[in-house]
Amino acid sequence: MTTISLIVATAENNCIGINNTMPWHIPEDFKHFKEVTMGKPCIMGRKTYESILDQLGKPLPGRTSIVVSRSGYEHEGALSAASLEEAIEKAKSENTDEVMIIGGAQIYKQALENNLASRIYLTRVHKSYDGDAFFPELDSVWYEAKKDARDEYSFVTLERS
Ligand SMILES: NC(=O)c1ccc[n+]([C@@H]2O[C@H](COP(=O)([O-])OP(=O)(O)OC[C@H]3O[C@@H](n4cnc5c(N)ncnc54)[C@H](OP(=O)(O)O)[C@@H]3O)[C@@H](O)[C@H]2O)c1
Image (cartoon, rainbow, N blue to C red):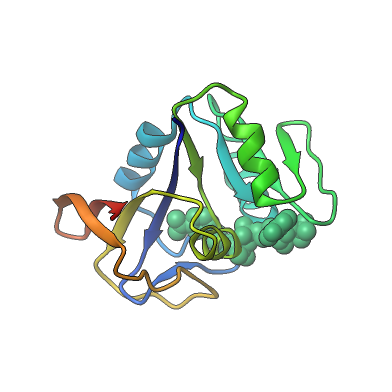
């Protein structure tokens, strides 16, 4: 059985991005993201993939990137998929026990609306930020299975009941 998980960092007002980048710089959260996703296929929207290329100059190392695009976007560093469902099929064919959906806003929204995931690795940043990309309000099917609270942020694992 393959678990399908979202991983996201949200501000108190659910902001997740601005100008196709992250609104904050929290090195511990990058480390956490790396630890959780390493070795697992990572599904993302075309804009998030381009944002990673801008930041790192290359795709995420040690993880297969699967980029969802309706406009036929292709890049040598990634697999392409025309829908989220196709991306999940491609990810599962990597023989993995967990598939990571890593954003951005459009992809999180569709994954939640279509009940595609059963786990969310949520970094809750304890502050509000201005932005143009937001995470949806979660409904009550999600419960906190784990929580590691720090001063400026908390690492929370949510499971679907
Ligand atoms: N805080 C966090 O944890 C986090 C994580 C990831 C991203 N982000 C932020 O989120 C923002 C980007 O989010 P976004 O919503 O603008 O973009 P996005 O979700 O990364 O990508 C959107 C693109 O994905 C493709 N797409 C969307 N739905 C599709 C579908 N059903 N089938 C096929 N392709 C589909 C389209 O690509 P085409 O236009 O090529 O057709 C669309 O333009 C950035 O600010 C980024 O920094 C934050």
